[in-house]
Image (tube, rainbow, N blue to C red):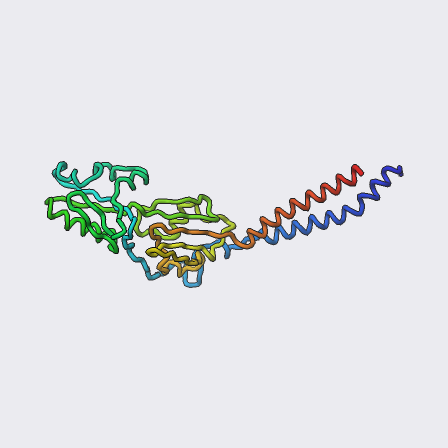
Amino acid sequence: MSTAHYLVQTRFTPLQPYMRNTVYFLLFLLFATSCVTKKELVYLQGERLNRNTPTDFQSNFTAYKLQPNDVLSVKVLSIDPEMSSMFNIINPNSAFGVSDPGSMYMSGYTIDTEGNINLPVIGKVKVLGLTPTQAQELIQTNLNRYITDATVVSKLISFKISVLGDVKNPGHFYIYNERANLLEGLSMAGDLTQGANRDNVKLIRQKGENSQIILLDLKDPNLVQSPYYYLMPNDVIYVEPRQTQLKRDNLIVLTTILGLISTGSLLYNVFK
């Protein structure tokens, strides 16, 4: 055996078991922390749910009450276009006249701090605390004093939600359904990622000048009975990552660092 071969064998033999054991240990930790069970991913679990029989849950939907800074689109339709045109900011025959949310906002009527909207000819109409349907009926009643055979169509166009955190496509989304629910809002953001925590989804909701933070469990089938199951304008949904996901990410970083250290030690011994 040559002297060079002996030195190389002597220097590297003690390092090999240590490096091999370290790699095995890190791979074991990575596998252990990466395991995701079905119970962590499935929505609306529970013994109450039957495979072939529908399970009824009582709905707690409450119609939204208009607040200051909400924006209403108000359109008047009648057989006399000239008469109805004075009430409309834009042509009412073009799908509410707009296609993007910015234009919808500019063409709507913003509720002021006193709860009023200021309509042409009619003047101020107090809609604070009314549902969108009740506001439409009130505007119709006021309109009947000025024009007959006309129909008012009023819609809330400032229904926007924000979805943040561990979802595939976070962002803000406009809702065109007054009975949209939490799962629909999450689906607009592309659903949760596999590493998302389904036990503690945070819902931030505006209540007048205050904000409420509610923790919701997507795995609980009783979620559909919660008063927070249905979305409201300006809701913010935040999905946090699971602890196992954080541990896995940290372990990947640790594995990379130890790999660099091992490689550096190996190169050091080679060139030394």
